[in-house]
Length: 287
Image 1: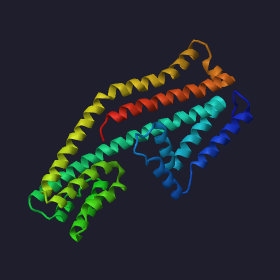
Image 2 (image 1 turned 30 degrees about the horizontal axis):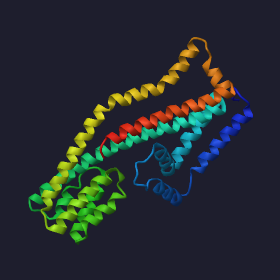
Image 3 (image 1 turned 90 degrees about the vertical axis):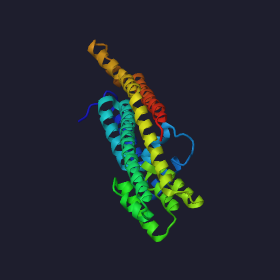
């Protein structure tokens, strides 16, 4: 039997509310798709809260498991306030981890697309048909393979390749912007009769410069990102130091109404600072 610092009934009510909220994040597939599209439709810079909502809409099952599990653990350790604070911290932490994984995937996909466009330009310069050149460039990651196999089939059948590439930007979000550049260059070659090989080489050079610049900026931002992580962990260190000297901050945070409110408020402010610093450093990296 779990023992709670505050009234057990209030703790379990809080847990039930969080479980109901997690289940509420679990819409049907069509509704989830509409919600994800609505939250990501605006052309303005996306706010951190919008990214969190879009994550919950795109991955409701994983979001429900993370939030519900964190709420249960937090309720057992710190009562209702601990449940709320733990859910906030877990949601933000998982969001940051997934964002980092998506950035790594984007870098890998762009590097593979860079190699594929280079092969495409070399084959075209050697006099190969666009279908043959696209088939030769299809070796790479799954996304690049799917795109260039479709381009090869479309070129063999006489399809409009720029339209085909633009259509693939929706299915390959990791390289959507880069595919749009390839599609624009291909359309320019078809519209004005320019050499497709030269335009593909120009796109490859542009992608290479962007990838190198992004790597340099990420390396320069390693220090500020580490500093923000250290600053975010200082409140936890303060609580541990307080417990070490016998001040009992954990009892105040979990055993009094004011402490519960401060626990939620402090966790929310710390997580807001993490999201805000992530947004600042994220916008500095070109896409």
